[in-house]
Length: 450
Image 1 (cartoon, one colour):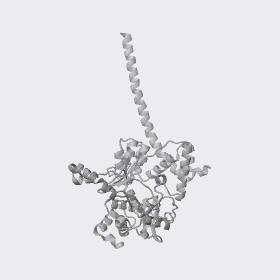
Image 2 (cartoon, one colour):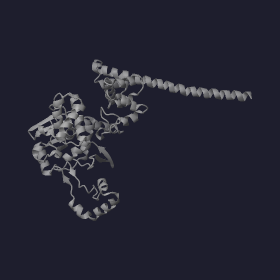
Image 3 (cartoon, one colour):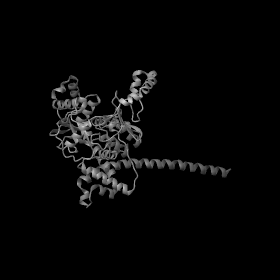
Image 4 (cartoon, helix red, strand yellow):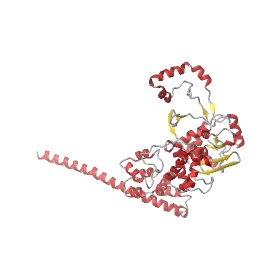
């Protein structure tokens, strides 16, 4: 009995030590996590100070990123993120305090600083409470700076991750290709624009310069105008400016036919005729398939002969001052087609993909007539390449997107915002600028500036 009791006591002691052991391990890791977050905050502050003081140059290093890689083993990408987050936290006191206290991890803060502003940081912190870094990344994805977590996601703002594991030869070749693209663009391409340009080069498109530059399947809903692009067999939602870009210079397939040539009944058709008539509509379409297929032909947005003339006139180069892209270009309508723009040569000019997209996003405006009387401006109205004002430019860009989302045309939105900026002041916040522009548009007063 004594032996049994002694054995039982030994088992209980071991169980007790096991319980206290895991608790101690958890408490130690929790303490370290809080300390790590605080150190991450301090590290970011010190990194910013070291970069501004030029520590790497004083120590003989070739660059700041090399200095940090040798000191911490960080990749240039990670160092860039550390600096970006540290800079952002200077204007986000609640997020900075949460990181300093260990209430949130640096990985979560990295994502939150992409969207949080001094007015919204508390809401984002509350929404991220209890979430993993991956969940916070998904929470932030699709939102822009100033949005609330409950705001609808914007397709163009959602980020997607590309990850490849390659050999040294492929890595070196890829880096050389990226350098070449950036040299041709005078170093102004970010990763997103460079990879898009590289993909378009690979897709190639038709050799005939009268045809649209490349062929991608983009479907635009006639009712809600949401656009999707087929990629690897999957429909991926794209932003409205991508759809607008395609309308400028594209090949349009007949609405009743898909790429395989089979008759298609759109969901909008089903909604109009009712679900019980859907099969009958499809059968009717198939009955007249031969006649419809003969009549339905793909059309080119810009007539091929006109497109060739524009490219020859512009020497196959992007016409934005300082841009040197000439290998893969689009034809852009200065006055948008939706606002009455025509295919006349003076309304068309050659743009590279990056600048073409910037036009339809509202970050760049082109006015005048081609080829000589053209004016290029940033979103804040300053001449392209000049010293723009970042805050007014951002407000103008956001207001432009809001008006476009409400269904206003590009030209009328630009003119209304220009008049509104004169009235409310160039440094006005988004709300008064947007309110004044809406008043002009609903009253039709924007047309006076045209």
